[in-house]
Length: 92
Image 1 (cartoon, rainbow, N blue to C red):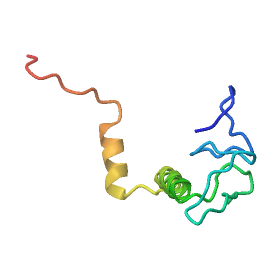
Image 2: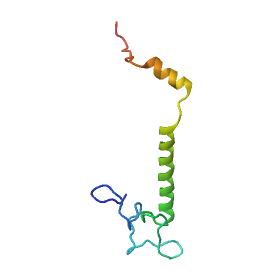
Image 3: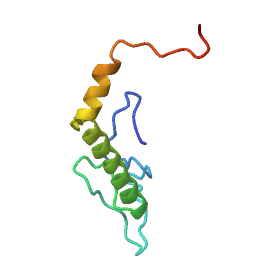
Image 4: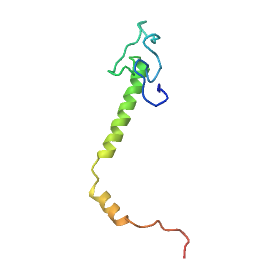
Protein backbone atom coordinates (compact mmCIF):
# COMPACT_ATOMS: atom_id res chain seq x y z
CA UNK A 1 0.00 0.00 0.00
CA UNK A 2 1.39 3.38 -0.88
CA UNK A 3 1.47 5.58 2.16
CA UNK A 4 3.52 8.39 3.57
CA UNK A 5 5.10 8.28 7.01
CA UNK A 6 1.75 9.11 8.70
CA UNK A 7 0.02 6.10 7.13
CA UNK A 8 -2.30 8.19 4.92
CA UNK A 9 -2.84 7.36 1.26
CA UNK A 10 -1.08 9.67 -1.18
CA UNK A 11 -3.29 11.18 -3.93
CA UNK A 12 -1.78 10.55 -7.35
CA UNK A 13 -0.11 7.26 -6.35
CA UNK A 14 -1.91 3.94 -6.84
CA UNK A 15 -2.17 2.10 -3.53
CA UNK A 16 -1.65 -1.29 -5.21
CA UNK A 17 0.85 -0.99 -8.10
CA UNK A 18 2.38 2.35 -6.99
CA UNK A 19 2.11 3.94 -10.43
CA UNK A 20 1.84 7.72 -10.59
CA UNK A 21 0.48 10.29 -13.00
CA UNK A 22 3.96 10.81 -14.44
CA UNK A 23 4.86 7.11 -14.46
CA UNK A 24 1.55 5.45 -15.40
CA UNK A 25 1.39 1.71 -15.92
CA UNK A 26 0.45 0.42 -19.38
CA UNK A 27 -2.76 -1.51 -19.95
CA UNK A 28 -3.05 -4.54 -22.24
CA UNK A 29 -4.21 -2.36 -25.16
CA UNK A 30 -1.14 -0.12 -24.80
CA UNK A 31 -2.93 2.87 -23.27
CA UNK A 32 -1.74 4.40 -20.00
CA UNK A 33 -3.84 3.76 -16.91
CA UNK A 34 -6.22 6.29 -15.37
CA UNK A 35 -7.82 6.79 -11.96
CA UNK A 36 -11.05 5.05 -10.98
CA UNK A 37 -11.63 6.78 -7.63
CA UNK A 38 -12.08 10.39 -6.68
CA UNK A 39 -9.07 10.38 -4.34
CA UNK A 40 -6.77 9.19 -7.17
CA UNK A 41 -5.45 6.23 -5.17
CA UNK A 42 -6.53 3.34 -7.47
CA UNK A 43 -5.74 3.03 -11.18
CA UNK A 44 -7.74 1.06 -13.74
CA UNK A 45 -5.20 -1.73 -14.15
CA UNK A 46 -7.06 -5.08 -13.96
CA UNK A 47 -4.91 -6.28 -11.04
CA UNK A 48 -5.54 -3.06 -9.10
CA UNK A 49 -9.29 -3.19 -9.75
CA UNK A 50 -9.40 -6.79 -8.48
CA UNK A 51 -7.44 -5.88 -5.35
CA UNK A 52 -9.67 -2.84 -4.75
CA UNK A 53 -12.84 -4.94 -5.04
CA UNK A 54 -11.42 -7.45 -2.55
CA UNK A 55 -10.58 -4.59 -0.18
CA UNK A 56 -14.11 -3.19 -0.46
CA UNK A 57 -15.73 -6.59 0.11
CA UNK A 58 -13.59 -7.19 3.24
CA UNK A 59 -14.47 -3.74 4.57
CA UNK A 60 -18.20 -4.25 3.96
CA UNK A 61 -18.01 -7.70 5.59
CA UNK A 62 -16.35 -6.24 8.69
CA UNK A 63 -18.87 -3.40 8.79
CA UNK A 64 -21.76 -5.84 8.50
CA UNK A 65 -20.29 -8.07 11.19
CA UNK A 66 -19.96 -5.10 13.56
CA UNK A 67 -23.56 -3.95 13.02
CA UNK A 68 -25.21 -7.37 12.81
CA UNK A 69 -27.95 -8.06 15.36
CA UNK A 70 -27.32 -10.96 17.71
CA UNK A 71 -29.68 -13.89 17.76
CA UNK A 72 -31.62 -14.71 20.95
CA UNK A 73 -29.42 -17.78 21.44
CA UNK A 74 -26.24 -15.65 21.26
CA UNK A 75 -27.67 -13.19 23.80
CA UNK A 76 -28.66 -16.06 26.10
CA UNK A 77 -25.12 -17.48 25.92
CA UNK A 78 -23.64 -14.06 26.73
CA UNK A 79 -25.88 -13.65 29.78
CA UNK A 80 -25.36 -17.22 30.99
CA UNK A 81 -21.56 -17.04 30.71
CA UNK A 82 -21.12 -13.51 32.06
CA UNK A 83 -18.62 -13.41 34.88
CA UNK A 84 -17.71 -17.07 34.69
CA UNK A 85 -14.12 -18.14 34.57
CA UNK A 86 -13.06 -20.98 32.32
CA UNK A 87 -12.73 -24.30 34.14
CA UNK A 88 -9.30 -25.75 34.62
CA UNK A 89 -9.00 -29.40 33.73
CA UNK A 90 -7.70 -31.73 36.39
CA UNK A 91 -8.29 -29.30 39.25
CA UNK A 92 -9.71 -30.88 42.37
